[in-house]
Image (cartoon, rainbow, N blue to C red; front, top):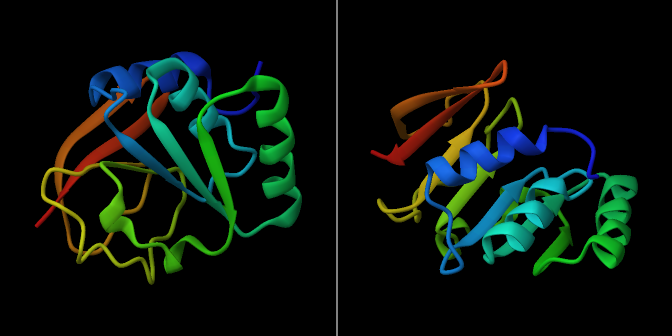
Length: 139
């Protein structure tokens, strides 16, 4: 089992936003890769994780070897990512300072925890098993 966010919570969130094999998901601050690996393996999407902690990045790459999934991990600050390439943006982080949402499509599903990303409009609050997430759109 991949540790961290309970798999039931990920399943709930990804079902809620109707994640499909047509989606390309990015996880901002992907840590050990659990979100990308779960999404790609169980929903068939391609997933990309950005991580600046070398140990976490290496753990994600190693975990993918035994867990599988159609995902890539990038050892780089997500603030440098071109977010226009993704149909789903996931962020379990507490600061979006420096993240450029200006090129993100209005159809992109943006799911975060905690802090409001600058320039986004709140669509819904999502509660599941004592976890609170927010669904946003570009203003």
